Image (cartoon, rainbow, N blue to C red; front, side):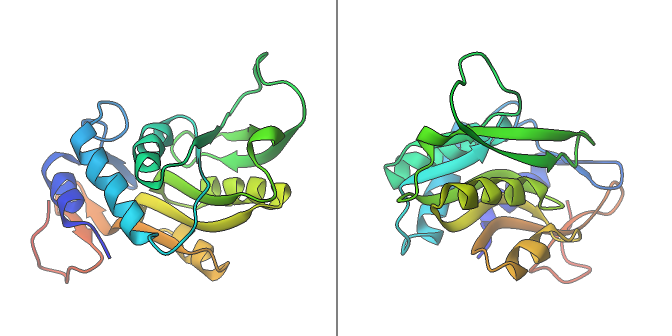
Length: 201
């Protein structure tokens, strides 16, 4: 089930730039509307209300704020995968390669093994889903740890790209709060439950 509050905000403040770029930096991933994030966290808890979640896993940097707000509703810690190995990340780590749709780069993401254990129940949270590479990389870290992946929550899914289809076909329980089926600078944004000709951005 999609989230009307979020879709209305995307219509009002989102900007389409280029063929596949949706800018939501005024409220989601640069400047952050904390009240909206609180409602997003509450909705993720409702979507996964029947699942045991011991940790939320995300990737730096845009997913961290969303994951932290959601974690308040699950009463669990957040683990975020780092894109570069730092001096304070020592010892054994899990690693996976992730291609960034936005930046057109490939990064090795890293999580210390002490923060993902075999008895964990992991929920992945991220801001965008386009080609699915971030969620696939994070799910690979979960697989390496032996933990259970209970699902993935995404704020905005680009339904016209194949990431969501690929992840669902893998059997991952994916919940997206807004699924964009079409977007254009002139005609605006259409969400999945809307028929062509309905209100656009």
